[in-house]
Image 1 (cartoon, rainbow, N blue to C red):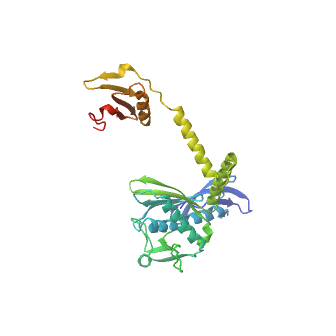
Image 2: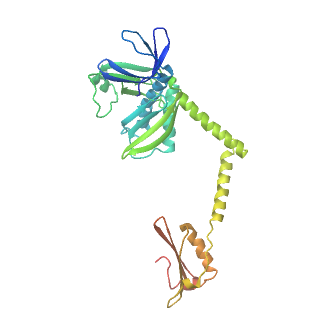
Length: 329
């Protein structure tokens, strides 16, 4: 979780700067990175620090959603899933987890459904401190390899109604969280990608950022509908029609015209053989054979092409030679 940001005020209430970052550099010592400073710090003077409440709220939303995402992965992918890293800020959340396979569209939909059902259930978030042994006995999830003190902080989001479509999460965590899951608003997965062998990464949005994401998608869809004079019911059909028309035109424009050349005819004992190496897409070889047949109907035709360092070959044998030669051998 990133640090809080905020503002610094003097004793008169005048804003003197913006706090962009906070780092703990010793026991009880916190270093504040202040920008847009318009004052000189004076020893023995008092200053008021105020947290940026909007950023804090968004960070809390994303951190609590990270816990729910973790539990949803354990249910959808399997209990073997474990956390391998995360980033929580005011814009989005990022979660690294153990898995060798990319999530399917259906799995992503199930994850979003579970997390959003839990958000809408307004489950209270409880934060307690207790001995680590008691926390583990109570089902708390800890990060593998992480060193914990004897007294740990436990964050609980437990559905007492035990609804199958609602998640329950208990994790050791020192970060900030919402008071109840309803504060998160909504949850949307942006991507699932590979980080390294056996490690994948999910990026997601919550709350206001998720709303902006949905609004942007709706605006794009509305602009497409206007351009195509389409409705919600037929916009996809119209897009597919345009795609099909484009593919037909592209195939027409890319049709290779192959000219027969007698110089390519090779005389062998039992028949004539026609060979040519073409500069074309492999899928155009069959059509090229048909063109050659217009001028070379009796014999064997062999056409080749090299595309992306791969050689493709098409062999055609006229009917009068089928009892002698086999084009597959």
